Figure 1: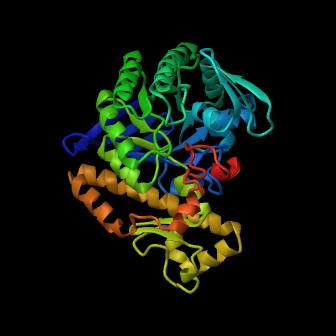
Figure 2: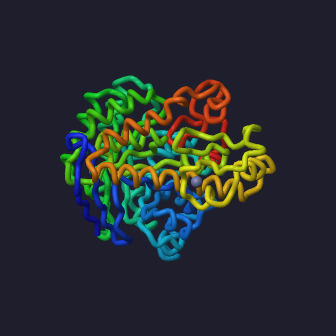
Figure 3: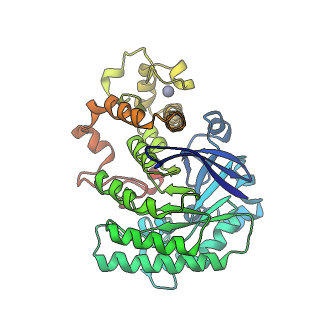
Length: 404
Ligand SMILES: [Zn+2]
């Protein structure tokens, strides 16, 4: 069903090179999962994803429960058949979306009652219901239903959510009916190191097929996120896959892998692609910028993606300005290719015992762009500095559809 093997480690055993074997193929780790919240990575089809080397993607239980409905997906043969994706799938339980997107939430020990962000209809999700929904969707890997507190919160609130998340994790285990899926537990605990350690010990004691670190990259300083990983990851069993949820930017993937994370997901490459933010080996290119209007070269001369092989910055700039859908698609392909290539380079570096040098060089190449300009900040951050549309960030003025 699922097996995980670590073949090689680097950085004194912290960074890992492994293989996650599922019923829908083997995934080399550290790996990045493109996000298809509503059952599709926007504008990108399964052939595109496979050509880029992706074997595992994320779909979202909350969104698919609301539309088209998990029963509809089950009737049509489950997510693999419905979406025609032959690779492996992980579904997020919906915990995060209930807490970040839904309106008028009421949390009790039983579960969460909330209003749909689409039509305001009332829904009640319990750990049992979240498990039932994910079993109907039929992903290879499913997640426990967790409570994500808005941060910063009081220690009492974080602790309460931590205990509830642990109780809910147990109920998710007990609610399972299918034996052909694997269930990952989620470690919460806010930004308090001791609470993270406690949460990790609680979840590990219950025994899951894999372990996720949730509730990070929600607007905190990067140093805080890395510190939380430093204390959490050593608590997780060495033989199980570790998944950092909803993270992140390229530098977060490098720093996460350096700390022993095996799996990542984030909408950043696809969403940023649609807004013309392109990732390159030397930092970002904002393709709407007038300076690209006459540039014949590719986005990144060091990139071997099909977009860089064929199209100029000038053409992509033009497509962006005229809002041509091809522009969004090509930008997304480049970004997802960049992410796939980055993971491949990390895996090779760990294998070769040269991850420390890789990490130094990665950061050095991008050092000139460490400070985002005001224009760029507004590009993805709201006027008030909150992350506009970060998947796992606070709700913002950006529509939900734009944020997926
Ligand atoms: Zn490219």
